[in-house]
Length: 201
Image (cartoon, rainbow, N blue to C red; front, side, top):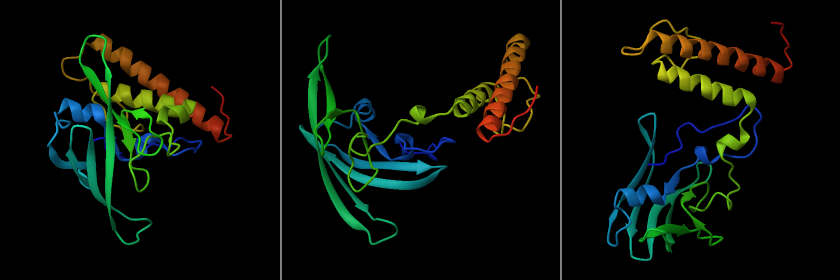
C-alpha cells in the first residue's frame, strides 16, 4: 500500500519526492478498518509485482506500533520498533477524523514517509511533491501519457496510435488523437529547448 512505484524525477533534478518513498496513509488504514484497537497485520509495498518492503503493525486506541528491519547502504539489518501516536479532531457533521502525530515534530499529518530509519512527515524529511518539481516537459509528458491511457495505447511515446478503442466514438477518438499529437509536439519542443537544441516549425 502506498508504495513508491518507480519514483519520480524531473529533468531539473532537485529534492527527493514523496512519490519515491514508502508511505503510510492513515486515511487508507481507516477505510479498511485497520485503525480499530487490537488489529494486527502487515503492510506491504511492491513495485512491478515484486515486494520491496514489509512491516508488521499493531493498533491500540491511542496509536500504533510498527516493527520492521532497516539498513543503510547495504549494511547490517537492524530491528526497529516505532510507536506513532494518534490525534483526533471533530468533523462538522459529527464523528471525528484521526491523524498521525509526527514522531519528530508532533504535527498532525495524514501520511508518514519511510525516507530514513523512522516514518516521519514530509517536512521532517524535506520531501517535495513530484508536481512541485515538474518542468513544462514533465507536465506535457504526463498529459500525453494520460491521453494515451484513455485511448488504450502503448505508454511508449514513440509508438504511433492507430487503433480506436472499442466503444469510443470516432469523433472522440479523433479529438483525443489530435490532442495527443499536439501534446507530444509541445513536449518535444520543451525538451529541445531545455537541452539547448532549437528547431524551426
